[in-house]
Each structure stands twice: as structure tokens, then as C-alpha cells.
Amino acid sequence: MSQQHPAAPAPRSAVATVAAPRRDWWRDAVIYQVYPRSFADSDGDGMGDLEGIRTRLPYLRDLGVDAVWLSPFYASPQADAGYDVADYRAVDPMFGTLLDADALIRDAHALGLRIIVDLVPNHSSDQHEWFKRAVAEGPGSPLRERYHFRPGRGKNGELPPNDWESIFGGPAWTRVTEPDGTPGEWYLHLFAPEQPDFNWDHPAVGDEFRSILRFWLDMGVDGFRIDVAHGLVKAEGLPDLGTHDQVKLLGNDVMPFFDQDGVHEIYRQWRLILDEYSGDRIFVAEAWTPTVERTPLYVRPDELHQAFNFQYLSTAWDAGELRTVIDRTLEAMRPVGAPATWVLSNHDVTRHATRFANPPGLGTQIRSAGDRALGLRRARAATLLMLALPGSAYVYQGEELGLPDVVDLPDEVRQDPAYFRGAGQDGFRDGCRVPIPWTREGSSYGFGSGGSWLPQPAEWADLSVEAQQGVPGSTLELYRSALAVRRTHPDLGAGDAVEWLRAPEGVLAFRRGDFVCVANTTGESVTTPAYGRVLLTSGEVTEADGETKVPSDTTVWFTRA
Image (cartoon, rainbow, N blue to C red):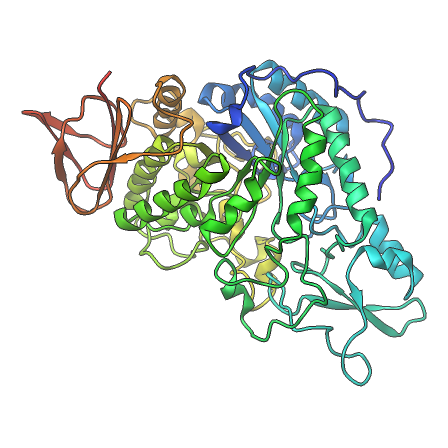
């Protein structure tokens, strides 16, 4: 892999990071995901960068979040928007330099914000030095043992080694041309062909990633979000799955390449490293598991700190379904003492303002704009519900502006690799990655001075930060108010339970101490008791004679204190 780079700043492992000093901050943290290429562009090349993020850190502090999670900014050919890493210790020039990363971390800490960086341990880029040498050296190269190279099946090795399919579509195997020009061995890639999977049974892979962890911890980062945390270990012998359309089984069935028990020993080793460092730093798992009950295995006390709750993200705006997943999540996390996490949007799924604008059952990648007014109303209500739940919450950049997905991007501008491969993910992730608007005017609504790498809709001028800042009732001000209340109300934040209250059908109502949340998921107004003083509401409510009339698709926060 890459050598240590001389441009790296001096290690700071002995110095505690200066973000908020309270311990176990991550148990109730609100963590804001920044997609670097789409957040802010400092040099006018149409692509976001680290310096752009650094200049916008005060905005994130004022929004009220606790930490910032950065999607990958490592050196990469960008075959999958940086999730194909060529050098884990270098910043891609499109985003800046290691010195820019150091300045970003320092400035964030000075503002009381923590920085979590993406780590991609399941696979590398095919331009990684290990992989390039493995191919160049031919069969028998020791470097091939660090990936999954296998001879093909069939008379002349012309068939893939097994029947596994790529998440992005097509076979999960690609055949290499050997140094002598002949068709040769195949290598495994659960995602794009440019993303060969590491063989975590080889000790050199584990050694290298432990070194990478230390490199970034020495830089001062406060933790890591682990990409495909469930995928590092493959079943022994790489057995056939025996079925097609395998992507449809993800999250529902046990797969020989996902959620294997061997991943947990890796994370126990990593936890030992993290615990050597001061500053209460954390690991967050992107772990797609077949059931809610499998997720807690990743967050046992000697492993990771948090795991994304994808079951919650994929739940429809329906009171019964939401209550079921909330109960199951809290029950599953309680025995291991880990906080639940709640998330509505990220860089891989259609923004929830658009998902909720469409009928349920369409999945998490949707091409239809739907009823945008309805979607925004439900998105605002869903946000207040999420932020009222016990545990930690994640906010994806731009959701605080109520941004919808851009569903009508021209085919010629799309860059999602899954879009160009059949039978895999739908490939419409570009719609949630369009650069966010900061101002009403300009070539990219304040994103940068030179346009944006994906076109922004004209209506985004009215959704910009400038258009919403200080405007009562705007979605931006709703988020700011909600995060301020969440930070100060003694009954919000960390916890492991809610007390459900009787409520009309289609309505969720629960108590946490002196705090009560009521969420009306129906299409009609409902009347509930006035549970105290109204703290915040996602829509207009009326109160009279000890009762509260809650409009359709609206959430209300009450307090008795």
C-alpha cells in the first residue's frame, strides 16, 4: 500500500481533541454527513473540496450538530465517487491536500465540532499499488493473496469461479489478462470491477489497516464510519449462492459474502487501537444485516460504538410500521448497552422529502418526484419524530433545507457506476448528490464560482440557505430550533426506551420524562390531549379546552416542565 507521506502533519495522538469535553458524547450525538464533492467548492472548478467545507464549518456549528462525517476524500480514480481508494494516506487533488485535511480538523475542533472520516476496508481501487502489482506479476504473485484471485471454471477457465453477483449488477468477478497476454485468473469485486475486494484472511491486510487507523488518529480525527462493515469476511470456500437476482435478497437473507461472524474479531482488534487514543473517539458501522437483531453484534462493548439503522430509514411514513421498528431497535440495542441510531437520508438513497412524496413500497431509489408539498410536510414531521427518539441521529447535507431528489437529471450527466450496469442497484444515486444551494443567485447558487458537477434545479434558489435563514417556519429554522431544544431539554438525547401513550389510529405518541412527542402520519387532522406547553411543531396546530388539533402529517413536541 502507500508509504507514509512527508506532507502529513506531525502526529497528535497524545493530545486530546478539543471538541466538546463530555464523555460518551456519541450516545446522543447529531452527526451531519458531508458529501465533499457536493457541499462547497472553494476554487471554482465545479467540484466541492476540503477548503470549501472548512469555510462552511461555522454554518454547521450554528445549525447545532455535534460532529461532521466526511464521505471519502482519499486519492482515487473516482470510479465510484471516491469509494474506490488508491491511497488511504493521501487526499485526492480534486479535494485538496493533507494540509487542507489538517486545517479542517483543527478548525472543526476549535468550533466544538468533531470530525469522523469514512474508511473503506472491504475493497480498494484497481489502481491501488497492491492490485496493480498483483496483476503485473501474474499467477502465483504473493500480492494476489491479498485479494480474491481464483482460476475460472469451465474447460478453459472461461466461467467465473462462483455465481456471486455484483451489488452494482452483473457477475461479481472480472477476468484479468495475464502479463503474457492470455486470459487468466478472475478477481472478486462485490461492487464495481474497479473495486477489487480485499482478502481479510491474509494478515497483511489487517496489518495495513491498523496502520491506516493510526495515521488518521494521529491526524486528530474523532472516529471512522466503516463502509460495508458487514462485508469484509467471506464464507470459507466462497460457495455458490444458488440463486439469481441476489441484490433483491440483501438485508433479508444470510449471504456468504455479508455479515459473516469473522468480521467481529477484526473490530475487536480495531477497538483496542482506538482506546489507546484520548478524546473519546468512535467507530460507526455501515452494516446491512438480515434482521434488526443481528445489528447489535457490531456494537458490543468491545467492538464498535454505533451502527446505522437501515431498517428505520427504509420504513414507510406509517405509524404502525414506525412503532414496530422503533420498538425492535430499542429492544435489540438495550442488552449490549449501545445507543440506537436514526437516519432518514444519506448519499445512497433518495432523499426522504421525495421518498415520502411517493406511495410506499417503491424502495429507497425512486425516479418520481411525487407530490412535493406532501413530501416536504412529511419530511419535516419525520425529522421531529426522529430527533425525539433516544439515541443518536444522522442528518444528510441539504435535508435541513428540505431538498428533494433531482429525479430528472439528463442521462449524459449521471456518474453513478450502478447506472451503467444492469440488474444491480437502480443507479439513480446522483439525484441525492446534487450540490446544495447556499445563495439565491450565482452560477451554482453559492456552491462555487464555476458551476457545479451536477446541474441544480432553478427552484433551488428558493430552498437555499440564504432564502431560508432567519425566516420563521422555514425548514432550516425548524432544524435549528429542533437541535437547540434537543441539546437543552433534559429528557431528550441519550436513552434506551420510550413510554407509548394511547393515541388515535395512525398517530404515534410517546413520553420521555416531561417531554411528549405526537406524530400524526395520517392524511386527516386528529385531536389529542394537550400534553403540556408546545415546544415545537412541524406544522400549524391549534389548542383549545385542553386539547390539541394536530394537522395531517405533522409532529408536535410538548413539555410539562
